[in-house]
Amino acid sequence: MKIGIDARNLVHNVTGIGRYVLEMCHQLAETGNEIFLYLPEKPMSELSRLSGATFRISSHAGNVRRMIWAQTMLPQQAVRDKIDVFWGPAHRLPFNLDPHIPRVVTIHDLVWHHAASTMRLRGWFGDRFLMQPALFSSDEIVTVSRSTADAVRTLYPSVSKKLRVVYPGLTSLGDGGTSSVLADNGIDRDYALFVGTLEPRKNLRNLLEAYALLPEPVRKNLLLVIAGGQGWRLGDLRGQMVRLKIESDVRLTGYVTDSDLAVLYRRAKMLTMPSLYEGFGFPIIEANAVGVPALTSNVSSMPEVAGEAALLVDPTNIQDISNAMGRLALDNTLRSRLAEKAPVNALRFSWKKSASELVAVFESAMAVRKG
Image (cartoon, rainbow, N blue to C red; front, side):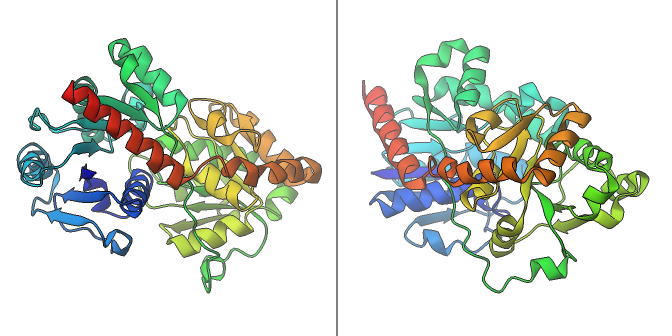
């Protein structure tokens, strides 16, 4: 099968949706499909895992030029490559894609609708006005969780029959090798770990407030490590830490490589992910894979992804978050019980299985378009 893919999410550092695109493309190529990756500009990261794919790289850097590329160069290249199916892996499809080409779109979340205040204006505008046309013009729609499928169904009931849930897989991060991330960041004792881009939807302000409510003896034996690149509209985290008098107990690592992330997961006592909204939540299963239990929210997709390997909290209730952190820090029996279930939960998610299910969706889309 010749699959054309909007690969714009591979241009920048691979996190979240970018990882989803990378892993899916790798598995699709591994199973004998011919992959055509369309990028508006040269990727920042080295994509050796996709060496078998055909890259169509344009020179449309910047937000406005990228939007123009998506509606002009990209559909033209897809026609020239005579692809069998086109996949928009992140909420978008070209408006003027050749009508003979079957098309599938993946919807990861409806943040623009459920948590609009946490988004940058550019991202909100794109999802608000480009997702709906993609949903209506697609032959099939993939969502990454039942929660997201339900959200799409509620907002757009007319597309219900096209919805297919295909869970993402679990990426192996290795063992970290010779990573010095712990020493480099002064991580010298047990810690609770947060992983993600530093932006409002991740609820870091409430997490810091909850951590500050822990008794001082607990905090002295349990650092809070925040690993993630700088995002947007979060304000001065360090200033909040100073105000809460916890700056000596919190470590901000910034963006970390996969090898550093592997070490951070393996040595963590717990993952803390009390997000306000998630379409899936990769850190939950990445932590679970190495036997680390999670503290996560009782909303959107997080209970679905975490299964029985997490404590669920109300992300808007600071005391609830703090109580759960204290329980996981001090109750060895509880933590061991959740840790035992964690790897079993992670085994539910496989990129090979995901790619196989996605190919079945592509085949269905081809049949629909032909009909």
